Image (cartoon, rainbow, N blue to C red; front, side, top):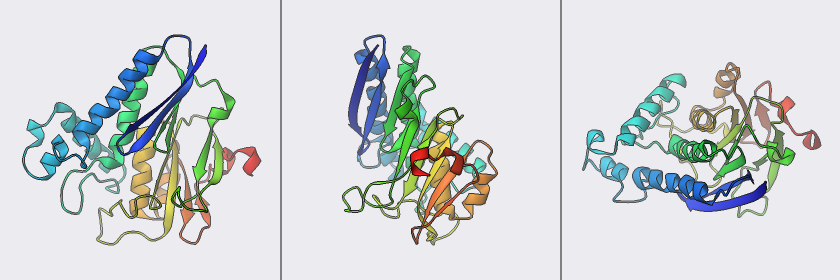
Length: 260
């Protein structure tokens, strides 16, 4: 077994693949990162020539876009129903923007490339959203740090707390907040954005599920805590506007012992 660590800039952020492998992983890491770039080429709204940018400008239709656009469209519709409409891929301007899902959707597809190759011992950091493989063998990689809700350039930046997912069903953590990108998550049911909290981290089995619920929770506000608390397979940690913390019932048991 040998260690690998691959950093890949994509989608305006950095993806980090870290793990152990008994085979030469280079080819499969290349395939995984190519998967990310293909998704970015299709779904980026920062690339004027991408299919999604053209769709937003009304220059094309979903039917004329690559087939994966319709697949993601349908996936977003499904998540909208599961979150009672609090996750929405449609902006206030009525354009299709699946950014609340597509980064982690692409990350999972990239991770699947490694799993299919038999590389099962790794962790993927997708711009701060974390996916841990079932075969992760290193104890410290089961610990996930939650950052303070400030820009990484801020003097107060650092670790807020650490979750320990060892021995649990959870494999993913996704965080939504306003520290880095401001109020980029819109309220699909009102013209006013929630002001209850500045950051929410959702812990789930699946990285897409964690990402979607984090986006939905940030859109809804603190009332989402009760909604997530009813989901047996989800937990969430909120950083309130005044700096205090609120969480679903199971979060306390997930805090790493050193931070209790």
